[in-house]
Image 1 (cartoon, rainbow, N blue to C red):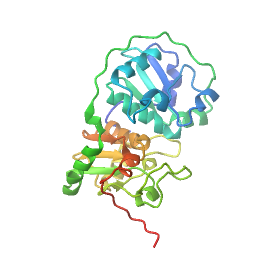
Image 2 (cartoon, rainbow, N blue to C red):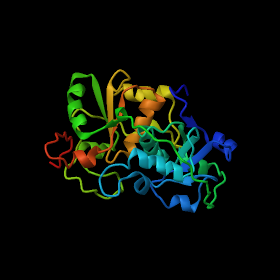
Image 3 (cartoon, rainbow, N blue to C red):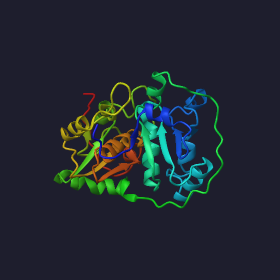
Image 4 (tube, one colour):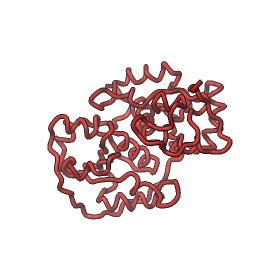
Length: 286
């Protein structure tokens, strides 16, 4: 597929390397009960909300707490960590972005995620593996991978001048302002619908095939080129809380190798509620 980085493994590769020393599997699902129904043998569960988010603030756990989390999961420095999950790897990509932002190395996604593994009739188990705790080393965050609200606002000038790009990966109805939520999802308290000025609407799922795997590098490049999102620009991606935009961030930075790609984790649930933030809207009930 000629991807820029070696960050994907196939279901065949995972099946061949189950139980290998130094290879660890982590399942990250939107539906946190799926793991209990059945998972790949040897995989541990990561709950994106309980394990990654601060208990009170709308922010993440600290870098030191990430080290503690990996230690509790029995992961060692130097391990190859394979992430996979439901929704064509939405939340696995979210965990990949967050852990990469936190300085974790050796991460990969299983192409196609849980749905492909299950569709192929591969082995699953309800047994929860036990791993001895480790002492994972201290981590240093890479702030070049994360965009904050004020940085996004400042970025609007680069978008307007053509030096930057903004990618809204939500559904067309969310982008237009017709709805403030994904199809078949509840409203989530956002006061205004619409999108960040100058953003291009490239829904995340356009990057995937029917089986949940990623399209080829040539197909992905053509998808983004058509909207003026190219590797020479400073790019920010967003959705509602950054799970879908993490998937698109993975495509742009890891698969296409674009050097300046940030994920705005505040996304529309922050921007659409923030006082004084400009929006555009292309839907009217009139």
